[in-house]
Image 1 (spheres, rainbow, N blue to C red):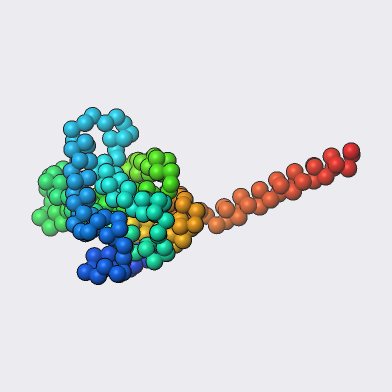
Image 2: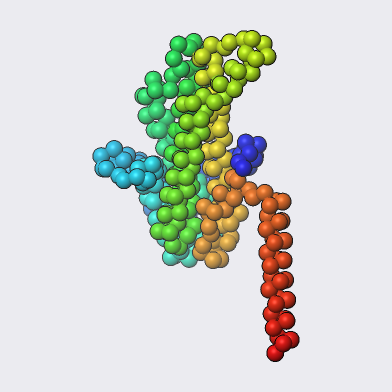
Length: 309
């Protein structure tokens, strides 16, 4: 089960390492990175240009082309942007044979502007439709929580972009990596839809709190107060999940970069998923014990057969 405390720890671990990497990639020095080998003589301008063009194309596809379910649940601007940035990086990693362990910070930092731009654009689009999340008959100050929900949901596009970029850069078989990525993003969106229905549409937290206060203190809360509590709960859940996804992606990529250089393949999607939702230790121990027991029985049967012969 995903634990909020674990999500915040993962997010903090990843984000504290992003600042130095971003400064290394986008400072004026040319001797602390190899951006010019990948993106040409004006690498920073090229990165921003690729990001913007890819997001425009992805946004046009999303709004103009009829996409079948479940692919219509995917953030296509993020996917297009990840592909545009990952293709030149893949060439540097897998074809030129020049990559070293010291290259990780600037390779990872290439996607940070895209994550920021994607999040801001998604936030602006969400704010244009803010009326759909405003709490009816509520004080003006509750708008800040509605904006918080929109901001948390906007981060979904940035998190999808970061994970997509990592998945495409860390696998030679990029088609397989892309398919696994699309499936994971769909599952995450489905999960968040479920929580949104429970917390915002049904208002389960509102109903529970209202009933407890009425039974214990005979107090009836105004409807907007319960809706505000639902929005706060949902916003914090979404924000912590996507911040943790970004932090986990960064941390996993840093730790497995040497493996990528040696083998050319790291299952980023599976590793990030296990980091966000680690398996229960007791359950894993029982599985291991059960497997060992089955192997012992199998060995005993084989030994008895050998003795009969």
